[in-house]
Amino acid sequence: MFDWDSLRFFFAFAHEGSLAAAARSLGVEHATVARRIAALETSLNMKLVDRRGRVYQLTEDGMRVAEYAAQMEAASFALLRFADGEEGRIEGEVTLSAPPAYLGTLVARRLGVLRERHPGLQLRLVGAKSTASLARKETDISIMFSRPEEQSVVAKSLGSLRFHAYASKEYLERRDPAAFEFIGYDRSMEDSPQQQWLLERLHGRALGVTSNDLRIQALAAVGHAGIVFLPEFLGKEYGLTQADVDTDTVPLELPLWLAFHEDLRSAAKIRAVLDFLMEGIAQTQGL
Image (cartoon, rainbow, N blue to C red; front, side, top):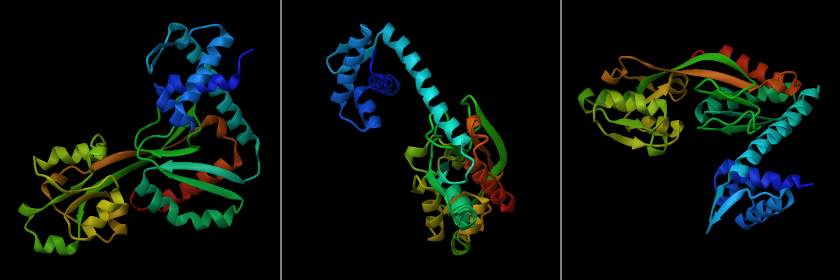
């Protein structure tokens, strides 16, 4: 009989693609991962990786074992979700991931309501610029800008966020439109739909200020640094004035989706958070 825990280490390597990445994901030294893979090979009497110096590559048998390991991991997460779903009391931790600006303005500011309603509930908020996995239990509930593609996920459309050009009133009054400067994402977010949309409309004009955080961009606009493109709720929050610029002929709209794993459908704590989120969305004028 093989060691189940060694299989977990092997799957981390197969999933991450390298010993170093697997070690980081598991919080151990890479030598520990290598040792566990060797132990699994001995117990299964199979060669799972080709060792070429420090580079490990999966063999054909290794690929097959990784497929079984993925199924076992999925089953373990399903068991955890089943246990959560069977719990009728509204208490314990729920993880919610969403774009940081959305999470801050439309969720965090209303949390007192949820805390008063369900004091035994702890909400873990994760400001995520990339999509967290519901199947791997990286999050319980996710709000995202694209429809989730994972299997067994319940997805609900929340409408869309409309982006417009904003600036401080003082900036607009003292600047000629031909000399407008712009604020946008930095290179770490260059593949985001917002940044791609903006760059296509700048016609070669440079960004004077960049940041990977939309709230910092908004604050830069408050500080008279230029024109920034924000969702309507954020422009209102920072008291910015909508600007009439030639890049804004067709407003950017991003679809907004709420998703959770179907195994959590009956979990009382998940339903409580979903109800809270939907109430907040109904009260938001910017959607």
